[in-house]
Image (cartoon, rainbow, N blue to C red):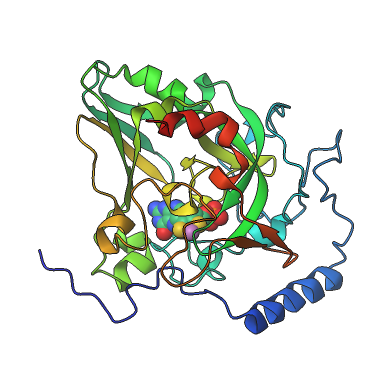
Length: 326
Ligand SMILES: Nc1nc2c(c(=O)[nH]1)N[C@H]1C(S)=C(S)[C@@H](COP(=O)(O)O)O[C@H]1N2
Ligand SMILES: [Mo]
């Protein structure tokens, strides 16, 4: 099927935001924070003891569900970051989720109609244990923990957030891949009636789809997030479950997953199919390889505007570099 591409199709991260625009938004957020008197929230990754970044109100868009009561969950101290946490009021209002909007600052306002219950995840392809898995059953059975991860968008903005969830390896084990399985194709829900962005931009090759090799999926860093900031995941972050692969650019961390298909061959992926020279199949963070339209040498922390040097594998080389040797 020929895909009609608008002239701006190759600007998936439309807000390769001009610094001036960004400063305006930051001032706006700061004034909003001041206005509602929320200035005293704990932002340092070192503020132990308190549920970190547990906000009053900013995640009000997290709907009440039968599983909201599972959070907060215990922090896994093996996954901490030397940087301050991103302010939850910033992270939950600055999202990339094209099914809802191509602009980052209004995704959270456009998710209301999206229905996340009931939800099931289909395990398919080369597995011994295929079939639909009910999300609530899954999340109750999995060992939930909190991990603080760096997160780096290909567009050069970055954040540090506490995700709640479980290792992807546990879901892989549940599926029981056959020996021929080498890859996993992950697929997002596609419900245009509930997704204004997908309805407006019908020419994209929906549903959003991504891929990890089975070895990557079994790496202990690969995480299925069901919560953030000590609460159940709000819809704009990919409720009820999304991938977090923190050593890869953000586009690999697919949201609102409905299917894991185990394959022998490398599957095609949404952004790589659209623009292979801009969005590598593997998408591993690498400061030495510029995006065709911008440098990847440094990154901008959302919420503070601080610039940091980009780290190879986003700082997770010790855990993942072995995957790519030879
Ligand atoms: N289904 C789906 N998943 C997606 C996207 C998307 O548009 N659709 N955007 C990706 C990109 S480019 C980024 S940077 C992250 C952003 O995650 P966040 O909004 O939770 O910060 O989600 C990724 N997952
Ligand atoms: Mo991104």
